[in-house]
Amino acid sequence: MRPTHVFLLIVAVLSAVTAEQARFDNYRVYELHIESAEQLEILQYLEEHPDGYIFWESPVQTNMDLNLVVPPHKYSDFEEFTTKLNLQNRLMIKNFQEVIDNERPNKNKRNGFGWDDYYSTAEIHAWLDEMVGQYPSILSSTIYGQSFEGRDLKAVKLSHKDGNPGIFIEAHIHAREWISSATATWLLNALLTSTDAAVVDLAQNYDWYFIMVANPDGLEFTRSNNRMWRKTRQPSGILCVGTDGNRNFDYFWRNGGASTNACSDTFSGPTPFSEPETAAMSQYYATIADKINVQFSFHSFGQYLLTPFGFNNSPTPSNNVDLQQIAAKTVEAIRATHGTVYTFGNSAQLLYVTSGSTNDYFMGVHGTKLSYTFEFRDTGTHGFALPATQIVPNAQETLNGLIAFVAEAKALGYM
Ligand code: 0X9
Ligand code: ZN
Image (cartoon, rainbow, N blue to C red; front, side, top):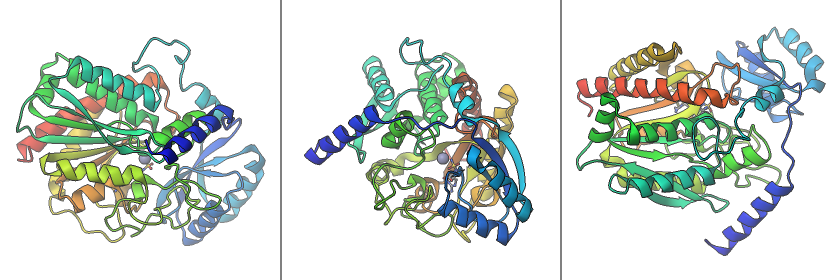
């Protein structure tokens, strides 16, 4: 570790020890639907002058849904402006602190790593090291860089034999999306230990590359200071910190759906790959890209399976019919597991415009033919604070989705 990193780590640890965790008592969460240019303009102004409001999505276009967290001192203000603007809104959460308080029912039962609770980067990495120690002939790990605060950026590779098609999974680039890494570690565990024939087939006949925590500094900040943090932790201006990792990749960077305001949650960064976490991921991917047939990004929430491209006026990928056909099979298998309904389609059409995302970069720059974003559970009942009791069912349905995915991708000649 460089001395500056040691220093930063000490600062980070000290501030974590002295910091108070932000509370959200009686904060309400509303889902809004932006219809008119006027509504969009007002919401964009509000995002730049939030005064207590918290945006879960940036207002980037008309015809998009957006979740807005409303603190108690803004109840009447919210009522007034939504009425004046005729802004469609639906109360999703009455007291967000209560949802956070119910997120980790097993947090005081410390019995090692598992999937009935959420864990820190250090705990996740320690578990990965333990797995590498237990399965040294098939599992290996790579430290592909360091985060801004000096934490290891770690990838693992599961391979039973040479020449397998490659599947790359990148999770937890957004700090508050805890279910993303929990699902990824569950999947790796299933690939290592399951005796189910379909899972054994996936494990033995494909090479799996996982990045469990793409943004470790962000994850730690959500645990110590603010559960709602999204970005990296490198200062982005005098008053603001962090860049949206999923807007910082160098492909049609700043071409829509990204902010140039350093305080925004969708800040693109001052330059592409300004963040050590994204620069390192792109360099790591460059070393394996020719072996990768499929790439998945794990996010939450909304229950979507999204396909590229996301940027403004982007072209439709030449294999879009296949992309959608594979997605259809995947969501069908997800639904057949526990009844969870996913919607699939192009990310810009279904959700909103984004640029500089991992998916766009891996497909656009490296030519990865199958590239998808999972937005896991739920549809807004708990939002980012999905109870840990849902980790296992979320992961089970994802695994069944992946089994169906691989079968269809193989049938279409991609693997
Ligand atoms: O906005 C994002 O980065 C993702 N949604 S989230 O709520 N998890 O932040 C969606 C990104 C999907 N778009 C592409 N990958 N192109
Ligand atoms: Zn995300």
